[in-house]
Length: 499
Image (cartoon, rainbow, N blue to C red):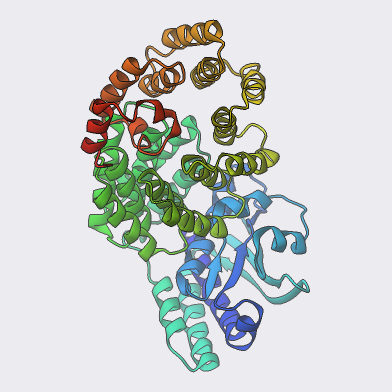
C-alpha cells in the first residue's frame, strides 16, 4: 500500500515540475520576485474507510516533501500543519490563497480497492481559480513502479525541452530516486502510520507513533526515516515532560545517530539531534551546527527554523531569532505552536505588549491553546496588569486543576500579593506532582513566582543535574530577574554555556 503513496507522489511531483517551472520563467518574477508559493491541500480519502486516513495524509505529506525538494530557492511549499487546517474544509480557493500567501494550490483524492488505485490531482491558480493542470492515475497496485519510471522519463524530457536547462531536471531525478531502505514497502507503510500518530502531538499519539516506527525498523533495520521518526518521538516526549528525560533522551540520541549513519541527508534527524544537544547536553555550539545542517538539507522544514529560533532566543540572540521565526511562519502560517513561539521570543526580549497582542491572535484561532494562554498571563504579570492575569488563571483553573494550572496559579497569586491563595496552590502542586516527570519544572516556576529565591536556586541545581530542559531558558526568562545577581545563578549560567 505504501508503494501507492511513494510512487504516485513522485510521479505527481515530476509532472508538476513540468507544469510549474515554465511559469516561473514566464511570469513568476513579475508576480512575486524570487519565489512562487504553493500549497498541497489534504488529499481526500475516498477509500470509504476512515482507518485509511494515514494513507491519504501520507500522500499529502510526500507531495509536500518532494515538491519542497525540487527548487527551494524559487518554489516555496507550505508545511503540513497549515494545510491540514483545510482537511474537509469548505473554504474557497481565494480565501485559502489569502490565508496561506500562495499563488497555486494542488487538490487531490485517493480511491482504492484490493487490487487497483485511482489517484487524481489538479493544479489551480489562485488569482483566477483556473485549472492549469489535471491528471488521473488508474492502475493495478502491482504496476505502480512501472508507472513511476514511465512518467519520470517522459516528464524529465519535457522539462529539459521547456526550460533548455538541467537544474530542475536534476532536482526531479533526485526526487525520483528511492530513499535508502524505502524498497521495503511494508516498513514504509508502518512509517506512514507512525507519522500520522506523531502529528497528533498527544501522549497517546507519541506512544502509538513509537510503536509503529519500531515495527518499521523491525521490518527493515536499514530504514533511516523510521529511526528519524523514533528520534523525533522520544525527543518531544522528553521536552514535553511525558517521561523521564534521562531515559528518553538517550533513546532519542541512539535513534538519531543510527538514522544519520544510514542516511546523513535526513533533515529531521539532524534537527532532533540539535534538540538533544541543546536540551540535554547543554551544548549550544553543536546544537547550532545540527540546526544549520537540517536547514541546509531542507530549507522548507518549518520546524527546524522554529526550533532554531527558540535556541537563538534562549542565547539572547534575538535579532537572529526573529528572522528564523519569521521564516518558519512564512512556511507554516497557520501553525499555532510556531505563532506562540514567536510570542515567546517577544516575551523573552521584554516586548510584553507585543507578546500579549501575538497571544491574542493565537487564542482567537484556538481559545484553549495552552502555550499562548500561559504567555499572555505571564506578560500581564510583567506589565503589572494583575487583574487581567488573575482573570485569565481563574478561567483556566475552572476547567483544569492539573499541575501546570496550579503552577501558574501560584505564580499569579504570589506576584499579585495574594499570599494565602498562592500558598494553597503551591501546597496542592507539591502533593499531586510527586510522581510526575514534570515535577521539578513545575515547582521551579511556582517557587519563582512566590519569591522563594533559595528554593529556586535549589531547584535549578536539581534540574541541571537531571539534564532537564527546564534550565535552558534561564538566561533570558524574566522570571529569573530577581536572582540574576546571585553568584550561584551566575555560576549555573556559566556551566550551562550561557555566560
